[in-house]
Image 1 (cartoon, rainbow, N blue to C red):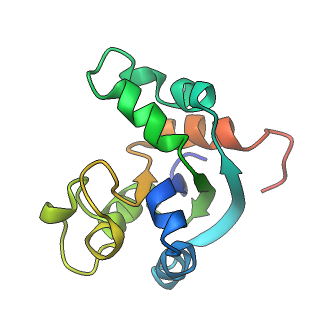
Image 2: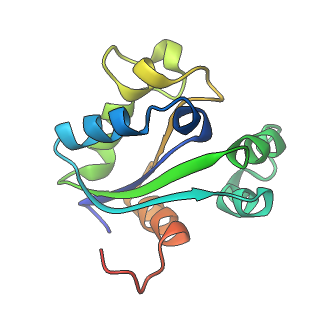
Image 3: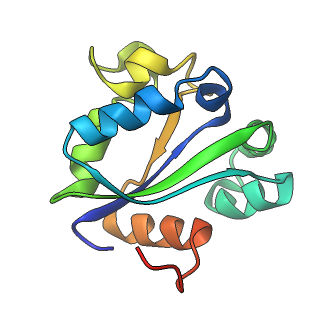
Length: 139
């Protein structure tokens, strides 16, 4: 997935509020091709596995509870310079600091409920994509 692929997930707050279609439309309008897409509901244990890198952080337990509170949409996206371009499209983690027109500015409720996740590196995009999609899937 290096270079031209990234991973995203639409978080429980945005799915619950009915923003999945609008977010996917923005992603495609920005030139990304969706190569894998999955609606799923994480268990607390599975959320803990995904966010294990944050295990020692004070927000870890709340993050796992939030991410297992409802359905999420996981996706692998393709485009040249995918990671950097997608990070720009989603905006700052804190929606109050996100640029106008970004996904988080439009759909996030708070720092915690910030609508979407986007991989921060090519390496993490591959790791995170493989967490949600079997390597035997064709995408």
